[in-house]
Image (cartoon, rainbow, N blue to C red; front, top):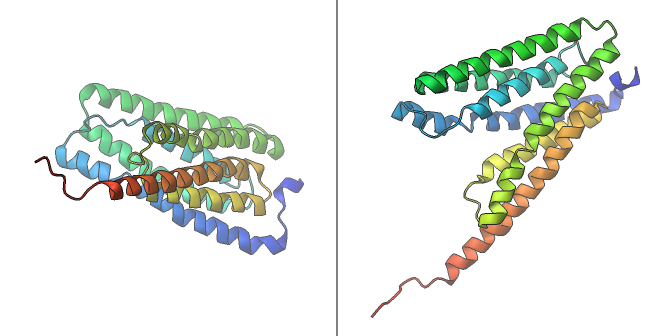
Amino acid sequence: MEFFTVDGSFSKWKDVAGIAGNIFAFGLFVSPMPTFRRIMRNKSTEQFSGLPYIYALLNCLICLWYGSPYVSQRNFMLVTVNGVGATFQLCYIILFILHTDKKTKMRMLVLLLVVFAVVALVVAGSLQIPEKVTRWYLVGFLSCGSLVSMVASPLFVINLVIQTKSVEFMPFYLSLSTFLMSASFFMFGLFNSDAFVYTPNGIGTVLGIVQLSLYCYYHRNSIEEEAKEPLIVSYV
């Protein structure tokens, strides 16, 4: 099973990349905190949607299971980052449920139960597969597909930035954290010879570069346009 082996000379660099990915991922996990401070202050979820946190929880739990020794080897960094991520997402979902209206509350509770049911089905079903290689492929494709859909989500923001020619809806530090995390786990997957890790994170790295490039371009243009405006406008 060559795909489970990793050259000893890359082991240290793999760990470095994994630790860096965990650190940069923490920036993503705490990014919704201002939103939830507002929700708790106003005691209302207003027009905010809870679906992104539901889907993020599902993604974290599937990727956590893929990183476990029952499925793959030498992927402990995936367990730590997705374990922390799942904890954050679950806390956000609970806060959302506590502060939303009754109708949305019930829908969120149903979706949360669906997430746990799906993950339980994936775990129980994969454990029924005696051949570890087959189990690795099955859960690997599921985690890879989930990650690709997650890293592709910035495409909507990229399209919005191009249409509006404004970076208002694309925070710089969030884009930077996303790029650094994707790049770190891209390297982690390469050093671990794991296509199910480096493929989606490679896509995320490319999209991160596109986001940062667009930010620099449109942010610079907005500064130049502001500089051209007169400081005092006289209507006399």
